[in-house]
Length: 294
Ligand code: X2W
Image (cartoon, rainbow, N blue to C red; front, side, top):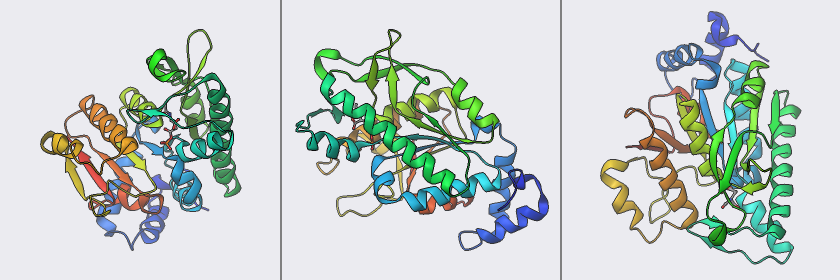
């Protein structure tokens, strides 16, 4: 295993470049390594992991995240659990209802939502630890939330404040913060927060250099199911949102990415890709998956 400060050591940097050589040229990989090594730990990357990735692509996710830690880079991970919630709620006889891509959450459903989020969070943390990565489970204390619209959605939260303390503590220990998208009101009520919403809020506060959404699809898909290379929201947003093949969850994602980019400097972008291509996205000019700009 490489040491945690490998990125600062020229010799180990060469090893990293060799490891990544199938993805890009030594020159570009070195450029990115240098740039990332100069960033404050909290400003490197926010990686949003969809529940489908935890279900279907855990091994690739774990090795991609562990690789970054080996190199001395610590991504901040925020995850969802959509498909797992669908399965567990359905098994409990709770019929799925979404409005505008958000899950209407009753008190009965919330108990299951909390349990599933905790289980999925631990699953990722334990898988990382099993491959010798350091990871910290964070299931509360980050997102102070309020009801988004209680009559409409039930126990669904809108983030009002982000507390970075648990994340900073994890980063200081060189451990990957793995954050579940559960919110909590000032009065202590736990709320279900859509993970794309939570990622958006986290990004607004941290303003990280890289923002990556890892999805089961590996990018935004066109009508034929092919990954779209890049999207410029300033010219393509309206057109995209009119497409009948953009379904509820994807619609929320695009809206959240637009809102997220609107709050960042103009040069910022969001990448939507899959775990196996995370390093390619981070260390090459070409990147991977779909690049979203505004
Ligand atoms: C989401 C939270 C999980 C999520 C839900 O209940 O499905 C709301 O819709 P993915 O896998 O990232 O989609 N919450 C309010 O966002 O997970």
